[in-house]
Amino acid sequence: MSRQIMSILVIDDEEEIRTMLSSILADEGYLVETAKNGKDALKNIKNAKFDLALVDIELPDIKGTELLSKLKQAQPKMATVIVTGHPSVENAITSVNNKADGYVLKPINVPTLLETIKKILADKTNSYLEMFAEVERAKSTTPIFKYKTPDHW
Image 1 (tube, rainbow, N blue to C red):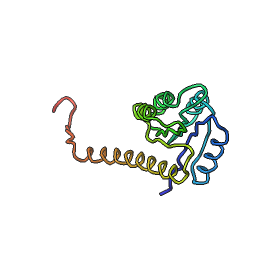
Image 2: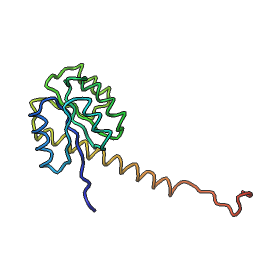
Image 3: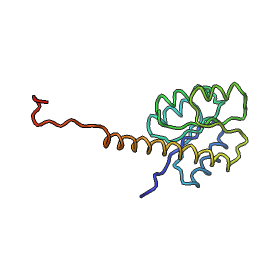
């Protein structure tokens, strides 16, 4: 069975961070696209499907926590991770309320980030596979009424 290549959208206004994350993630086997602001991110997700988005909390045109809901609206199955150099209880709560799947602090600890991404994507894949298994179980346990002629039960 071939392993599916996961795609990640890196959204950060700092070019050095976009470049660094893009390089690290590509080396790990992910397909990576980048966006420098919310507008570019929304344009990217209209043109491609992503498994995960890394979202900087401080973007020039929108707050990362606000962008989360727009991303989830456009691609409900995409996982999202907030990346912030400005941690606060308020940011964490807003991130959770907007359905962030993770929260990573800057400066980025690369092994921690990679482990977070792997765990989130594995959980997402497992829940997807569990859903299919449940459908198959339901097919085998749900009674089907068979009849010979449509006008007689």
